[in-house]
Amino acid sequence: MAFLLPPLTGVVTRMFHDLFNGRLAIDIGITLFRAISAFSIAAISGITLGILISRVRPIRWFFDPLLSIGLPMPKVALLPIFMLWFGLFDASKILMAAFSASFQIVVTTWAGTRGVERELVWSARSLGASERQILWEVIFRAAMPQILTGLQIAMPICVIVVLVTEMVMGGQGLGDSMLRSARYVDSPGVFAGIVEIGLLGFCVMKTMEVVRRRLLAWHQETQKDH
Amino acid sequence: MGSVARSPLDQRERSQGASGGITISGVNHEYRPPRGRPVLALDGISLEVADREFIAMLGPSGCGKSTLLYLVGGFMPLQQGRIVVNGKQVTGPGPDRGIVFQNFALFPWKTVRDNVLYGLEKQRLPKSEREEIAQHYIDMVHLAGFEDSYPSQLSGGMKQRVAIARTLAIKPDTLLMDEPFGALDAQTRSLMQEELVSIWTQSPTTVVFVTHDVREAVLLADRVAVMTARPGRLKEIVDTKMDDLPQSEVMKTRKYLDMVDYTWNLVREEAIAADSEKDR
Ligand SMILES: Nc1ncnc2c1ncn2[C@@H]1O[C@H](COP(=O)(O)OP(=O)(O)OP(=O)(O)O)[C@@H](O)[C@H]1O
Ligand SMILES: [Mg+2]
Image: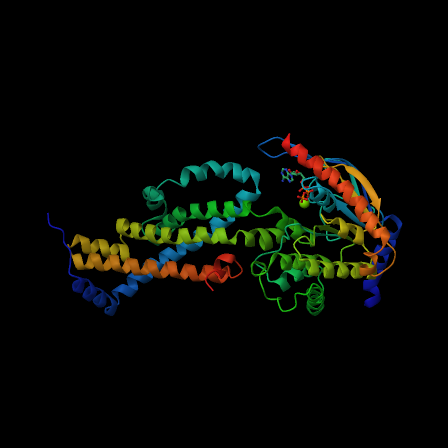
C-alpha cells in the first residue's frame, strides 16, 4: 500500500480552483453556519443551565451526576440517536454539536459563578441591588472570564463535531467534500480539505480571542500585553 | 416637588433621633467550615453605640472585628443575640448601612466612576445628579483623573479610596468601615482622616470604625472598644472624646498622648495573648 502524498503545488492549485468556482465558499459557509448555530444554542443553554445549577439546589442535585457522566463521554457516539430523532439534515448535525459543546460551558459557568467572592455580592447588596440585579450585574459579570474560557473550548468542539457529522452523514460542508474526495482517491482534494479546515479553525479561534479581549478589557490578563 | 421629596427624609431623621444608634446584645458567632473544626469568632458581645457616635474597634488580628461588622451589616445570619440599628432589627443588608470592606470588594469590571455610580443608580436619582455626586466623592478622595481606570490599574491605597467614595456616595445612616485606611501611606492617611472628620462634622452619622492603628482610633473616635484575642469579647471601652481642636493640635495634647498610651497597653496585652495562643 502506497501513501498518497500530493505535491504542495497540487494542493494549492486545488484550493484556488475551489475558491474560484465557489465550492469553497459554499462548503465553508455551510459548515460555519452549522457550527455557529450549534455554538449559539450551546452557549445560551449552557450558561443558563450553569447558572441555574449554581443557584438552585434541586437542579444541582439532578445535574451534578449527569455532568460527571457526560463530560468525559465522547458525545458523538450518540449520533445514531440524534439521526433517529432529528433526521439527516441540518437539525441533527447542529443539535449533535450543540449537545457535545454544552457540557464544557455548563461546567465552566458553574465553576465561575461558584467562585465569586462573597464580599463582592455583599457590597452590591448593601449598595441597594436586588437579587436579580446581583445575579446579572455581579455574579454573571464576575464569572465572565471563566464563562469565556468555556466558550473558547466549546467553539472548536462545535466545528469538530459538525465536520464529523458531515463526514458520517453527508449533506455538503467541508467534512462531506473531504470525505467525497477520499472516496474518489482524490488526494489533492483531501489535503486541500485539511488545509481549509485548518484555516477555518484558525480564523474561528482568533475571532474568539478578539471577543475575549474586548469583553475583558478590565481584566488583568488583557493588560499584560500593553 | 421639592417639598414632597423632602418630607419622608425629615421623618427619617426624626425617627433616628428617637431610637438611633446601634444596640448589640449577646451576640455570638461561630464559623462552621465544611471541613475542619468550628471556630468561635465572637463570644457574648454586647455594645451600645449612641446615635451619631463615632466608635473605633481595636483588637488583635483574627479576634472577630470583621465578623462583628458583617453581622451589623446583616451579611451573615445572626446565630445568637440581637442587633438593632436605628430602631430596626437587622435581618439583612441594606443601603441604610454602608460598609467599606477590608479587601475593598470593588467591581473589577467597572471603572472608578462606574463603581462609585453603582449605588447611586439603585437610588433612581436623575442621571446628571448621580454623576455630580459621584464626581464630588471621587474628587474628595483625590482620584480625579482616574475616573476611567479599572481597579486592576490602581494601587492598593487608590482602590481603598474608591471603596470609601463608593460607600460615602450613597450617604448611609450608619457607616461600617473595616480598616478603611489600612493600605494608605502616612500622608494620604492623615488627609483622609481629616476628610472623614470633616464629613462627619458636617453630617454626623453613626460610625463603627475598625482599625489596627491605636493613634488613629483615639484621634477619630468618641470611644474605642478594645477586643480580646479570639474568641472575641469586649475587653474594655475607653472614652476618647477629645477637645474640639484641629487634629494637629489634638495630637499634641497631654490628654491625647495619655489616651494613646493607655489604649496601646490594652491592645498589647491582647496581642501577646493572641501570640501565646498560637504557640499552644
Ligand atoms: N469564612 C470563615 N470561615 C471560617 N472561619 C473564619 C471565616 N472568617 C473568619 N474566620 C475565623 O474567625 C476569626 C475572626 O475573623 P475576622 O475576620 O472577624 O477577624 P478580624 O478581627 O477582622 O481580623 P483582622 O484584623 O486580621 O482583619 C478568625 O480567627 C478566623 O479564623
Ligand atoms: Mg478583619
